[in-house]
Length: 210
Image (cartoon, rainbow, N blue to C red; front, side, top):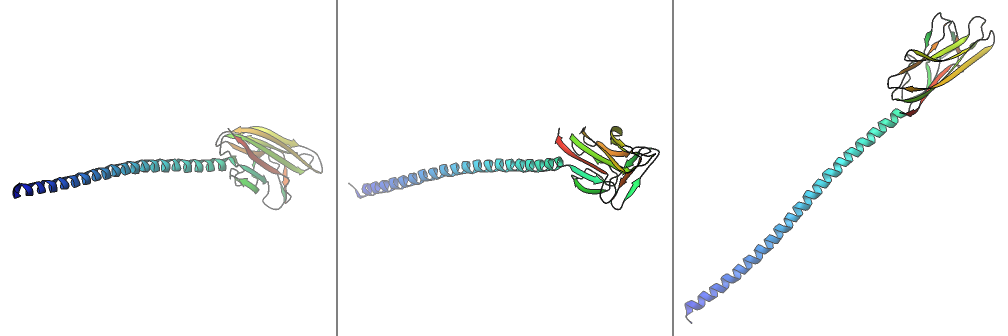
């Protein structure tokens, strides 16, 4: 065998080893690329899942806030007596006169306005109201007040005796729409009394929403 042929064979074996090494590296790179692609897919899937979780979290937070607001709306109750301080008698007047109950120990939901005497329904539902009207007896002037819904007389509390203190009361449950107005009117030619003991009162609360 000639020296040139032997060198060619050595060179061929060297090239074969290099080819095998490059092929091994190529296979390794392909495996790495496959692994990278898998990692990319996993990352994309995790990113999509994270976006979904964030969206669900936002929805849940919005639902919680909505429930909180809804629950706050459902918490409606008030009680008020006629005079903020002192004692006195109102009436008689020759016409029905709106009553403003100014001493307000309870006004959950702020649906009652002590400046106007109006209760304005914040939510559609069934509401219960009670009112107690008292005055010292008088030969010519009884005591009486009527509960009014949107200008319509609903129930009246009325009594008349010539002497001593007397009181009367009534109550009603009403279906109210949002914005409906409920208040009391002093009946014409009647009187109402109140003092620091809070004899004459107006109260109401939401029973349930509808």
